[in-house]
Image (cartoon, rainbow, N blue to C red; front, side):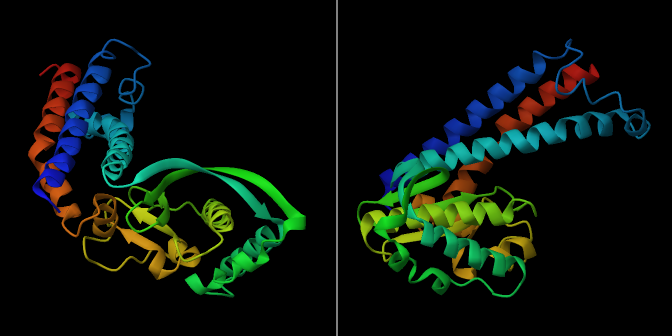
Length: 269
């Protein structure tokens, strides 16, 4: 990675965090006197209130902070990826009934634990592209990255903390595989298309094995981009994760300042 590329990544992280902190603060400060504001709707829980004002405040704010910070990390990753890839968030094209039927078959086997996911499960799926049974589909995608230098196409399903809902695991892998089929049908080859399940951080601790059973039930080990691997990929550098985290730490004071301002307003400190 060049010095210029690193500066560009750091600039994206810094701008995103500063903008997020400002917007988060402005939003909640503007709702101080609004009975239906995000925090005010939650601070009247008498059972939590008995534990103290600080706990009441933080419990009311925690969900808003967690979800909104997750959103900004998603947007930040897209902006960083745009420095190195062509980025799109949808895939559209042809897929055959034979391919969708095959996808349904292997996903049912995953669900019943009759088959453990491997990339080889769909190694010959291009051969099922039959011209007499084609339909056109469009899928919204978290990240569709195209690397012009290598010709590789990457389809990524991002869950910030890694939670994969039991009811959605099958459908999300199905959507990824259908996007995969659309791309390989268009390219006429499977060699340049890969799919991934990604997380922004490792809920088990950085560097530790990923063991969420619902993820592993539907995704092969080679399809996981957990924490460091995800950031390294979007930064297109083995130092990507370290750069992003370092710049985030340098700007975390913006968020801390916003939280203190909100706390002072609501607790009248």
